[in-house]
Amino acid sequence: MNMDTELEQLSASWDAKAEEWHRQVGAEGDANRRLNSDPVLWRMLGDVAGLDVLDAGCGTGYLLLKLMEKGARAVGVDVSAGMAAVARRDAAARGADADVRVADCAALNGIGDASIDRVVSNYVLMDLPDMRGAVREFHRVLRPNGSAVLIFSHPCFSPPDNGFSRLPDGRAVFRWGRPYFDEYEYREEWGHFTSPFICYHRPLSEYWRAFTGTGFEIVEFCEPTVEPVPGAEIDPQTLNRLRMMPNSVAFHLRKPGR
Image (cartoon, rainbow, N blue to C red; front, side, top):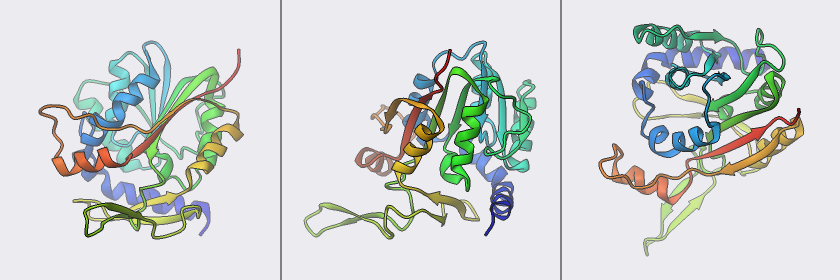
């Protein structure tokens, strides 16, 4: 399958999920984002007031609007016209004039070289057929000393044919359904969604090579975890799973320069 066909399939898949995704994530993010990865994301991004920020893979716009509320000049890009339309609609309903564009993260047409201070990409890279092209584009649009915060599903644990099983004595054993070092496309069924998600497995080392090979410096790498919070809207089973293994990885990258 060629890249154009993969992008068409990806765009159509997200178009079909746009309203469902908006219900899932809402204006504040789902429980995983709020309790697990968003605290790390905001710490890595730092103060964005007055900065040009690109939300690469903005979806239905919850993060884009938060960036705007924090004073950023934010631009959102998503491959799905349906997702972008929901983002614009939601922003307008809240009195915000959001700049949301339909584009592939691996071809950020219309965003100039060295025109962005921060790039944030939140649970996007594992959904891109051309992850390496997207990383090159992030590097291109960033100003010297600009930074990127990239969060994506942990490649060690995310494919659906991987999982835990229990031994008779109660110990948990993790199994891989396919070799971890392979790169492959897969479909993931998820909760109430009526169609599967299109995802791409790559070993963590390939992301690392893509970042450093493009010229980024890795400022920080971490695996976010959920801390028990009284009254948090997360069921005990999900909390236990997220405390047992990392759900995501977070990279803080810097484009060197003066």
